Each structure stands twice: as structure tokens, then as C-alpha cells.
Image (tube, rainbow, N blue to C red; front, side, top):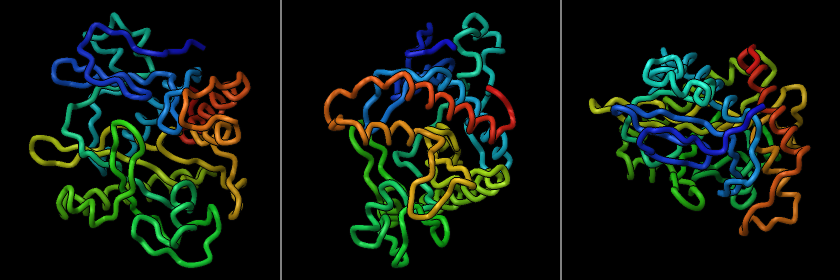
Length: 293
């Protein structure tokens, strides 16, 4: 399978992120998902074959599925079919999205349904998560009594920082903060119910939102991809231990067990880790969408 490290196109480069290269075309954004993978705030030197196609197609699937309830930024999920992009169809096919250009809120909206990751670390420290007191006696990977909204800053460099809801309201205004929480919890509940029917737990997920010129809040970026969510198989879930991940956590776990200090230049991934990661991304796509990439 061909891999894409960096998209080279004759359009104005709007932004090159850890995974996506974004171009501005006639006031719209052409978003191209590469096969890069990041972990611990580093872009790794290894590419994951087909990863960009999975990210793009699974996000397109969820945008289409949730678009009737929550407005999103998608103009076309197949820009390679449009006349202005036909000369670049080979590069864009399955890995690109044409979207509205909106003013993005400088926060990440995170919903957690299970106690893992940084949430577990915070709980062990003082029994709270982003200022929210949790019940005593919870185990690692326990299901929370109900999903909770835990926003973070969105750092261009370095780590995102957890925010309380009060801090979010102070940053964006109480009405906007409340709306972001409502939309995030609504999306998480709907997707979790759908995924459970297919034997998949969505442990947590990240959302980003923007605002159009009329002040409407719009879902942007990506949703429910293996880069932005934790996926577990229901039949492999056991409270107290981490189920085998079907997302980017697989690579994080490999790096955590390696000698890398997570401060210096990251190492290349072994061939077997690359192949297993690519396989997990394709498998979660197939389970959730019922299609092959």
C-alpha cells in the first residue's frame, strides 16, 4: 500500500499539523490526511501505511452519520471528484476532505466514559478529574457513573492542559462553554450506543468546534477516529486492566515500554509494530462502518 508523508499540492498551504496538511482553496479548506503518526507530542519518523485513508474515511462516516444533529464543516467528503481537484485525484482519493473555513475555538472538548490515561493519573492523585470529584474506589479502566466533559487547552507546541468547566466558561463565555459540553456529550452518547451494537467500547473521545460568521457552533477537525478516540472490544474489556487498544494507544504502549525518554528524537517503529498498527486501524474501520477501506 502506498504511503504519504507530506502532501505536495499547488495550493496555498494553510497549516501543516502533526498528521494533516491543510490547504486554502477559494476560501475553503482542503484537508489531506497523511500516514504520519504522533505520540507524546512528537511526530514519529515511521509512517503507517493506509492510516490517512482510515482517518479520513472514518471521520467522513461519522460526520455523515451525525450531521443531522450537529452541524459540521464538511463541504465534500470526496473532493477528488470535483473539477478543480481532478488533476490531483490520485493523491486525494480517500484521504481528503473539503471543508468550510471557520474560526476554531482554542480548546479541545474531551468526553471520558472510562477511567484511563491522564484521567486515571489525576484520580490516583486526588480523586478528581478536571475539578470533578469522582466516587472513591474506582479501578483502572472502570466505567464512570456517567460520561464527563473534560476540556483542555489546545497547544500549538507542548502539552495540552486540563481545564475546569469554570475555566472554560471564563475563556469562551458561559453560554458557549455550556453549548460545547452539551454537543460533546450528545455526540459521545450517540456514537457509543452505535459502537456498542457492534461490540466496540468508545472509552473517550476528543472533539473540536468552530464558529461561523453568524455565530453558529460547528463541529470541525475529526471525530471518532483511532487518533482521537480510544476503542476497545467489548468482549476483551476487564475493569482493572487495559484492554487491547484499537487506536493510537497501541503505539503509545510500545513506546512506553521502550527505552525512549519521550524527550529526545523518537525512534523508528519496528516493522511488526507498523504492520500491527495499520491492521488495527483497518479493523476498527471495518467493524464500525461495515466496509473495507
